[in-house]
Image (tube, rainbow, N blue to C red; front, side, top):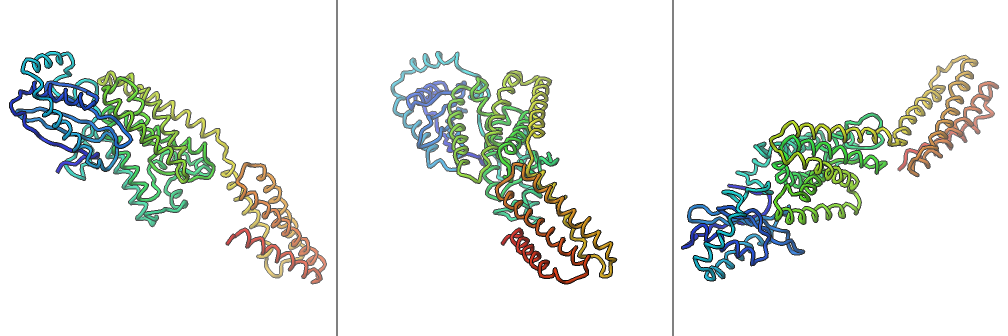
Length: 487
């Protein structure tokens, strides 16, 4: 059973007493009367596009005449799942209009009209002329995941995203709502970590998804744009566009967000939509197809960008991917006129790769990483704290002089150094919650110093007179520790 990504409707009709040429002319006149945009016309058929409206996306209607039958197919140009009967209605309207006007033409009139069509004919099939924008039909569901000629990189990307997601689930990651820690451990993009040397997250984050619904929506969009764009670009350009726009999207997300965990293929997918939109503004694609797809793709992109304003969606990555995709699409255009010139294809792709990677590297190096620096410095804080608390693990019969030295040089000293460290960290651009935490850490260190000073006196004077003061400060220390731990 054949399958298709977008809703469609197909019907075969007899030519009756009309010749192939006569039926072609009548069907064309019917399409014009329905106010459809006529695309490529050949000796055996044509492609037309309905108008985009608020009620429905545009549909592509293809007529193919073979022997004594005409096959009519209407297919949605957008990536909607249901057409609500619009495709069937298109075919019924075309046939109804054909029956309505067929008696208005004499054989002589039909012959004259066909003669007038000769300069517009593109060849022996309606797919001639500028590259067509059509979606492949599949022999079965599994065909969506199998690389074939003209559809090679898309299924590989789909399969890779699915396999990675299954591995995540097998490792215990929540299938519906993965937590941030799980996403980061699998390679999500997170500014404090990515900017701390883990640059590879700019790429791996394009293959990590935040739950099965996120995966499904992204792969559906990838499948749709892949079917349209990969045949136009070829495998090399298409693969490069996905990776380069994905990296650009990740860098944009880093630039915009301080503490957002970003993951998903949507940045790269928006990049592919950007490439397609760029080509739709050129003459590389047949004019009527450009109008239909430019509107439907434009509405899809606009809707998703507006939807991203609601929160919880990394719109920065979407915009970064889209803009980089537009630029790459225009850069590809000159080379697409000479499809057989592989050297030019590789040269253009190589230059784009160097350009995108260079700009991304520059931004990556220039972005401030205050939170990453804070985390690194806090490791020093913990080491000093451990050293300062070492006085509590000294043997019971430690000599007095050594104990006093430890309290002063390894205790009070390290608490004072940690106060200096926290004051330095306060100069960084940090979230309010971290600044509040820093204030508590300063109080914590100051209380530790007070406690150690009384401990020093108690040991030096060999007395218990400071016990109440030590207990008082230790209680306050315990309170702050509990506050720092949180609920």
